[in-house]
Length: 503
Image 1 (tube, one colour):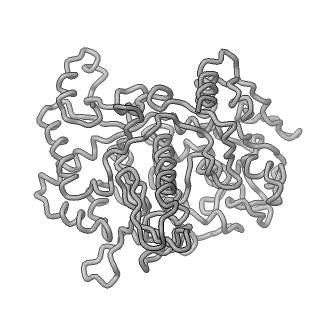
Image 2: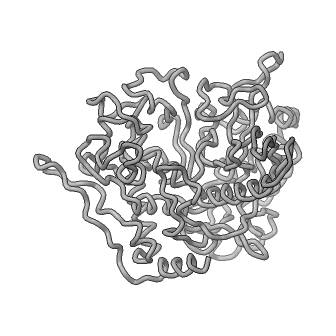
Image 3: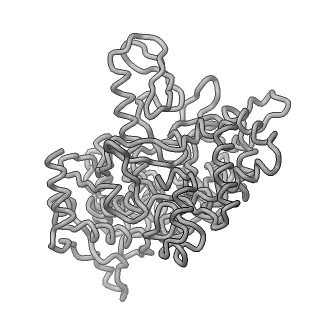
């Protein structure tokens, strides 16, 4: 840890400039130029030659850049899953991809790094079916809405700490059924022969995977490497160029460009996402309306929603460390070249709040656990809105129910300005999303439905107050804060609002 802190100091304080490598050259008959200004080397980053602000800005460039063929956009001879395919497929196609010019093309609302509308839906798993999948039928893919990446560094680190705690608890347990608890969340497991052979809400490897709505990706970096290849045809050298044991080579996709994204590039893109501001809360300026938000927060808990949408979890460490040593094969995981930053001190504001005694508080309204939101088919009043998928995407069968029915608990800390809702983005209001819950959430859903309309409205008002905020905002602000917050006239009211974000 001392070594990592020394490296962090160099990363943040080094007066040097990034040792960026030159951008790729275009073909001789192309009078064009690549969009990316250059490329970073991981060794330079790990040695502290790239100041934190520059690393963040390089990551922003990678996130918003509309990459072109000179950068290596496209994968004419490979699928989005990294397999060889029949060459000469379309450069862009909405189903099996590539289908996007930039990360920000889909992650855009309310600003780059955020969510996307229904038009930006992704057809998950179709990218593995090249030659081109012509249909958007659920027989071929899972239609998914784009989620926001704000606060993703905190979510990544929560998953890592939960994984470490679960694995430590499982070590040495006798055969039989057990309940493991981390961050106040219970996971039921069955152990036989010293191994976890069955589990609920998590894979048997006990690795919390907080990304993708199916809960199948373990880190921001893994998510980023996958997405660049899938959506843009930009191949990370850590998965392809530097992985000859898998039969890969520097131009595996046969587009004429090698080393499209260096290990350092992926680190920069990862740090940018991890260091984006955390969502916060926007409170009404009117005192009575603020009181309704507080009342809605209490009702949200009273009807049972907070049992899965856990309001807050505590991180033991304030540091975001990149990369993750449990990253899968093909995703950089060398801890010796790790860099880190303090999520309560560095990066875009608003930032995580510090916890007393150390660590940080993450108010994400999730338990990072997979749940089934589908009633049994034989129930007369069954609610099966969220049973729309036909493909499992790596989720195992559980309790006799197919894996495709299980989804990780949606983070609600940005729900107020991340519409639409539901896995497909086919719900336009918060009320619709709540009433679509069945299965494990049916009791809470029914309790909500039985409330008086003014009580349901209070819950919706509370949820609408949880939002992605403008850069450099306080974690809690009132409507029109730029005009009144600076004068201090609302500071006392804000502090007395009862909001956990102000504590």
